[in-house]
Length: 193
Image (cartoon, rainbow, N blue to C red; front, top):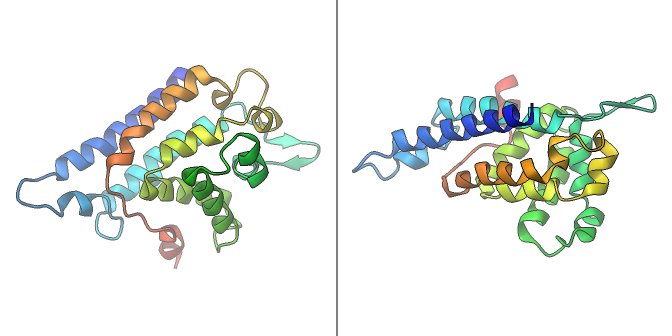
């Protein structure tokens, strides 16, 4: 199943790359910018918040301990723990701009109107990671803390706890850092109104 999860992410990334390639029209310099802007291009919404986020959600849900000690957990709890300042400091990321941006983004989302919807916060986190061109680094940071992974995932079998899969995941997502995304943080909230 881990190979299938990686393949799903790869397919979603390939779809995004193809979307931008289709928009790269000679003589239209703003076409690529518009292709990544969810206020102009609806297709980017389904490619990011639909396909890419769904594929990454499967990765984060793989072998996740959803119930522990009479409490229901979501993988947003793992994300919050993995990017806490204490965790980032332990992992040597306290001075890393991308890691600190991850921490700040997670904290901002938790305090936002999306704070009661972990699934929406996850999709927005992915969108904002694309905007910042840090998504690949954020994936590496989230998977770096073995103690936090052991707390939230079944030992030895989780995708995020297996460097043989995390490294290819980061490599698959890395090309997205070169694409011009302008994805709105409150897109789903505005769609609800």
